[in-house]
Image (cartoon, rainbow, N blue to C red):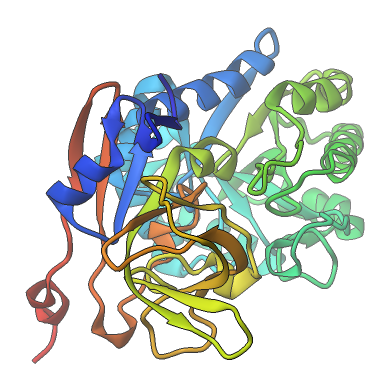
Length: 413
């Protein structure tokens, strides 16, 4: 069985009880379902089957080494957003030709790293970056493969903090400048323009921005071809959203049905960069109740041992995550804010939740936390990073041990 479900009123992951995992590894604890990752990756791959495509898993969503290795084993390639993510990809077993390098502020050292390795493509963000790639490549007597990142000025209709396709956003080359810049840089000795790239945002649940972005790069590809610049692929990024609250969202099949007719007109292979869509529903954050405090207004605070240091999304984006008791409680129903232990009022995992009154020591699971959870964790208040486990059927393994205070202080004098 895949994913998180109940057996005899107790929440389990595939075939393993979350109570067992918490007892073994403590809390806070990230738990991932290998079966869910596998099925969601295959759903995207199957949706685009029959058309030349490559799925470059976006490591920024969750770069835990075992997760990256699992996806490599399924046939994924990698999308890296930093030099260190390139290193993670290599350690996970990806070869340079399977890595695309994206990111708005690539340093000269990171560009040199990508050029020396010979990654599949560097998704170039600006004229200045193209100049740096050209210079660094010529110094090395080589030629780098680049894709021009297009800012199509399209509203992703998601949270403004994760919208990347508007002209007011810092990402990419303005759509009206791409053709002229392409003509100029196609003459450079140190780079070869092989693709167009666009990524308009994350957690997109309306397919219109994604189809419009695909149409934009298809049109630009035709214009570049008219200018004598023949590219070999279109990278249409990631961004397909998931359902955090149980509402209906487009499936991978819906997405493919919307964009494939557009892409077929170009005749070019497509690169996709899924991240959240694959791993978000595959993860849960286990946390233990520390205290229950009644409020004068009749509500309550349920204080747990996980907070913004483990899961930043609710604090950063106002994001909603379902919060469920691991074992069904029998107390009276209350309305409560589920809050963390940090010295910040914003340290709130969920507001105005209806739940059975818990007792200290009870376990809760914050669901759909597999993306942008552990990768955004911090050591604020000198808290240590949580452990992580990967469940596969009836077995599980510790894929990241809990950080200790000695680990935390090891770099300090």
